Image (cartoon, rainbow, N blue to C red; front, side, top):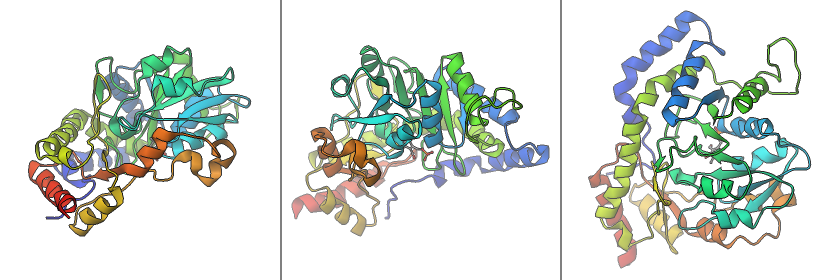
Amino acid sequence: MAVPLFDTKTPLAPLRPELDAKIAEVVDRGTFILGPEVAAFETEFAAYLGARHAAGVANGTDALVLALRALGVGPGDEVVVPSFTFYASAEAIPHTGARPVFCDVDPETCCVTAETVRAALTPRTKAVIAVHLFGNVAPVAAIAALGVPVLEDAAQAAGTTTDGGRPGALGTAATFSFFPSKNLGCFGDGGAITTDDGDVAERCRMLRFHGSYDKATFEHVGYNSRLDELQAAILRVQLPHLDAWADGRRAAGRHYEEAGLGELVSLPVAANGSRPAWHLYVVRSERADELRTVLNDAGIGARAYYRTPAHLQPAMHEWGAGLSLPGTDEAARTNLAIPVSPVFSRAEADEVVAAAGALAAA
Ligand SMILES: Cc1ncc(COP(=O)(O)O)c(C=O)c1O
């Protein structure tokens, strides 16, 4: 049986009548930008996370740019960011006029640590972007204890829980992407910024509407970056199911463990005190490329992520050339994402493990 890398369709199938009705409701209302659906989603999403405020924006990349600017990041500042992440985490920084300073990750968790962040701090550091990669959790409190504001990039961590609260409510502010394949995804692009700080939230709302607080006077050069009503409505239907879907993602990890995958490859390691809703289930192996070929040949989705990490991308040459980031190199070289979804079954895990076992036996 073929096992896809993602399955976004099956979890949504039972929600189809509710989604259709909600979309019809929005169309009938005729308000498509910054109306009641966005306002309600912002309230519901903030409450779900345990944050005071949420502001819907057009996508997770804009969420980072607007949040950094709302935190006062600008020309002359430095922002620490891991290199082993989706490129957008770093790309957001030069848009503010600040300089990205790349730090390393722990290859076991694929997240930054307080130590890797500390090594990148300078007197010009204005903020740290802590990426909760693959649904795992970066140690936000330990980084904040270094005395810098932490912006969580929680694009991949919706549904994850920790002993100290949910990602999205751990730092000074946080950003989410609702790209369709994310743990909470809409039917196009979407994003949000969350924070407990009312001023930061207000500045994000101002920046998403062309730099205007009252939609009449334009005090700053801002953006046109709103979450639209249809996407907010679609997200509102899905949000009550996010925890059950997250449980399904965690169960997938247990299925792999019980099927014996850990005898063949290194399994992902949940950060201390966290219960990751694995957005991607990423194993590590010195034979990652061979394993991908074997799995793909067996009809099983498998894909390496960020093989060329952000600091080595051509557009980051000015800030990334010549850096030594050994944890990043190891994670980039050895990672392989294998199938995971809210409905991933033990039978599918057995199938993946059997195919992977054939490589070990070869
Ligand atoms: C870690 C991370 N940061 C930022 C983004 C950017 O989000 P978007 O694609 O919605 O702009 C993504 C996802 O695409 C991501 O995975």
